[in-house]
Length: 180
Image (cartoon, rainbow, N blue to C red):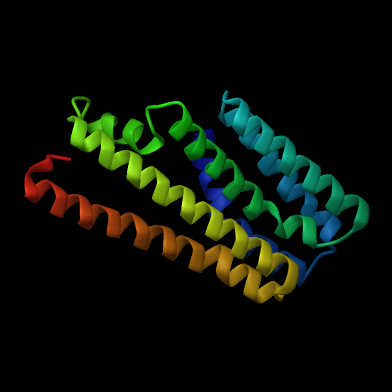
């Protein structure tokens, strides 16, 4: 249940902030981010996600104290940074993040599949760098509407497109005999 609440709040966060900024001072929206930080703390035992939760809490505190929207809008940057760290660390200490996910449905991955999942993990790392950079740019220089549009819709569409493209490539690789 915590995971569902966490995912729902994370996905809806840009929309909630955008709608809230038109009605409330940023300091009151800090409670939304603080609640998200608390849910994240309770949802994971991994130190990386605790760092992300504490970072979100610090952004909430900065929002409350300064009564400024910018710290609220930096939360997607924190999430992308955490995902980059998670996927990047898995490249340094295998198995890669994508290999771990692949083994959930196919525990007996052949060596070609392991190599393929490692490459896909690199692609996701590049995506998180790009997505985090655009999230930061929209927070720093974009309007509230541009920030919400990118972080609440475009970023998810890009993730979906990358996931779909990877699935299509994997099907081609499988047809060639790599049995990914």
